[in-house]
Length: 417
Image (cartoon, rainbow, N blue to C red; front, side, top):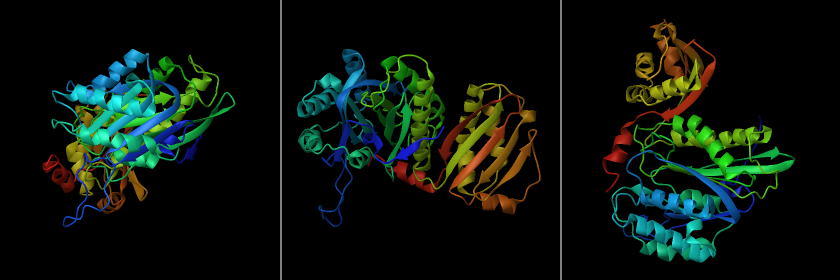
C-alpha cells in the first residue's frame, strides 16, 4: 500500500500544535564563557484542538520513571482521553523520592497554561537516571512554551526531546479511509539504552483519524511488536520507554470501532510511520556509523522470525564486525544459534548485502566460498542488510540496529558527568 509522505511530524495531522524551548535543564552551550551561543531545546509540548483517544505502551523494566506512573494514572482518571503532552530531556526523573510530585507538577503547569485539567496531560522525561529534576526551570519555561505552540512547531518539539541524538526524528503520512483524508505523524528520540520490551525510547504519534480507544490500543500493540520491539542498539531496556498514540478524529472518517478494511488501512499507515522512525532510531545509535537491517525469512511463525532477527541485531560481536567491515558471518550464525527458537540449523542460509551488491556466505548451516574483496566492498556502505532464511515456513520479520564503535564507549563512559 502506498502512502503520501508528508513533512510536519506530530503537526501533520489536523488540529495538533507543538513547540519546544530551552528552559535550562540542559547546560547552555558555551565557548570560553560565552553563554549566548545556541543550545538545544530541553522542554517540549504537543497540544490538540480537540480531546484525543489516547493509548500508550510502556517499558517492562521493573524500574520505571515517575512520568510513566503519572501518565498511567492520568489516563485511568480520564478513561483514556488526553489533550496535551509535556516532555523534558536531560533528566529522566527516575529513582527520585520526589519524582511523582515533580511529574504531577509538570502536568499542573502545562494544564494551567492550556486551560485544561492536569489529568488530561501526558508527561514524559528522558535523560540521566537518579538525579533530582529541577522544577524551577520548567515552571519558568512553560509559559513561553505554551504561548509559542503552532501548527508548524513540530521541529522545535522534536529537538526538545533529544539527548545524545545527533538528528531529530520525524515521519508522517497521508492516506484515505471511508473517503476521508487522514494523517498520522510522529516524532521519536533515542540513541542509547535501547533494547525495547513492549516499547522503546520516547515516541509521540498523532493522528486525525477517528478510532476508538480499544482499536487504537490494538493497533499500537500489534505494530509495536514488529517495529520498535525489533530494535536494539546496546541491549539495555530503558526505564522511561514510552510510545504514546493520540487520535482526535478531526479527519471526520467513519469512526473505527471494530476490525474492518479501514482498520487494516489505519494499521498499515501506522506501520509506515513507526517502521521509519524505528530505522531512524537505529541509524542514530550512539556512536554508530552503520545501520543494520536483518530480515529473517522462511519461518514457521512470525515470532520465530522476530526472535532470530533480533538475536542477530543484538549481537555485540556481529555489531563490532560490521564496524570493522569484516564479513565474519560466523558471528551471525552464532547469534542465530542461541536465539530462543526452534528450527533446524542445518537448513539455515545467510546473505549479506548493501547498495554495493549481495553475497552468499552460508548455505545449509555451513560456510561457502566467497570473495573477501567483494564482501569488503559491500560492507563499506552505511546501510547493511542481512538476510537469514530458516527454510522451514513462509513467515518473515525484520529487526534493526547499528554497529558498535569506539565512540559508543566514549559517549557512555562519562554520560552522567
